[in-house]
Image 1: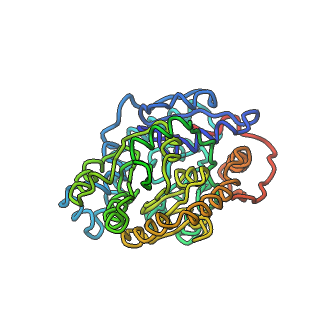
Image 2: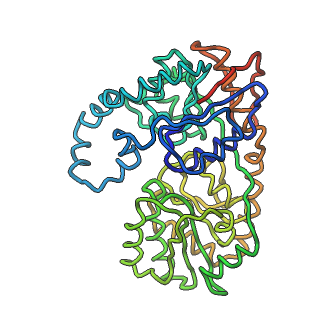
Length: 416
């Protein structure tokens, strides 16, 4: 089950999983809340793809992500009032009740053995409640940090197993409630496609000979922390004028970032290049990759950069500390710290030897994530375990290199 709308990181991870899942014993249907471009890419791996609505329902017109980014300061102040935000969350299922009942009917008609929530479960309250109404076990992914609050715990206790993509998130979930069943299953890293001619053309469109290109890739949203990347760039240029910067991606913060670039006088140094379907070519054109995220699950763009032997500078968001060992295969800087990010960029711009050594070590760190069959087996075994146990508690281990319990039987159609 996916919310949909954009083909983002969670769908990329789902596509890789489905492509390498054991379809001899597991079959899948895929349901979106509303139409999603490029969803047809998953069609070869599922029995059917369907959507619940032909357009975005009213209650979803403001998602949890966009709520964080709203410019209406009055609403934000009200949301911070004690109890107001919590009350809104507890009342949200009332507004969502038509979707809950509609989804429950779909689940019952499908006679599914299991419902899989592929987004972080707090984004899919109707899915979770509909599955419980239909009496079907639920496996829910946790791809981003979730708040430690009563409503989150209420939802989490209704999930048979929470699948986290980072050990840090798994630890926080267990601290939140020891009764929760949590397993870490890192997302897989698929092949990163590049074309040398296209890379050369792209690079020449962004920098001149002798200049260093520092860049990032992702949706232009608050979570990516691009504001701090832009501010760091203004500090870098003051020390290293040959540095140039670029971000590939689209999103609601585009205008805000363009204004910031202009206000800092970076028009000749910083480019927003828009969405790139050839993400591998963009990353390959860079000399240094920056992940400035405020929160993450498993940032695949950073892994892709490491796979292409690009030195990576990142905040310690999500699974990054499990991937990057500081100064061994990358550099880690604090959150929301333009000065710290500037220092790291300047060091790499001035030290070609360090750039090369971090790039090679970064490539080696990505190898376990490229075992697509093993990563898919991790998820398969979580599904199988849930199908065997039904709504009772089950045991499963997970994570890179950890053993999985063998299947005794397999669900007929485990996931929407």
